[in-house]
Length: 149
Image 1 (cartoon, rainbow, N blue to C red):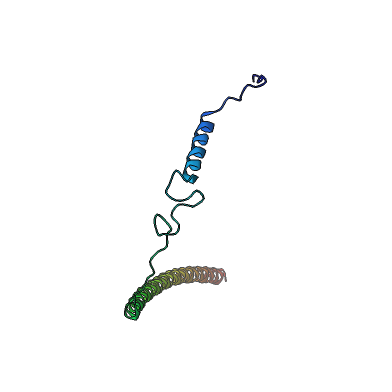
Image 2 (cartoon, rainbow, N blue to C red):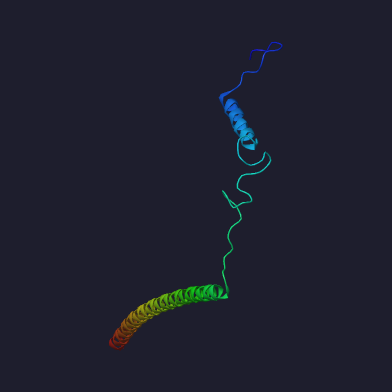
C-alpha cells in the first residue's frame, strides 16, 4: 500500500461519502430552518401531527363503553366456544385413533393364537403318527418273536 504524504487526505470510499450525506441530512432535519418547529424538537411529538402524536382516547360516555364491553365479551365467548369445539374434536380424533390401534392389536393377537393352535395341531398329528409307527414296529417285533418261538 502506498504511504500518504504529509497533508494528503486519505482516499474516501463510496460508502464513506454516502454516510457523510446521510449525516448532512440529519443535521438539516435538526436545524430550525429545515422545519417550522424549533431546532431541538423531534418529529411527530406533541400536537398529534405525524407519527406517535397524542392520540384520541377511546371512549365517549358510559353507553359506548358498555357496548364495547358487551362486544368484547361476545368475542371472548366465541373464542372460547371455538377453542372448546377444537379441543372436543381433537379428543374425539384421539379416541378414534386409540380404538383403531386397539382393534388392530386384537386382530394381531387372534392371528397369532390361530397360528399357535395350528402349530399345536400339527405337532399333535406328528406325535400321533410317530406313536402309531412305534406301535406298528412293536407289533412287528412281537410277531417276529412269536414266529421265532
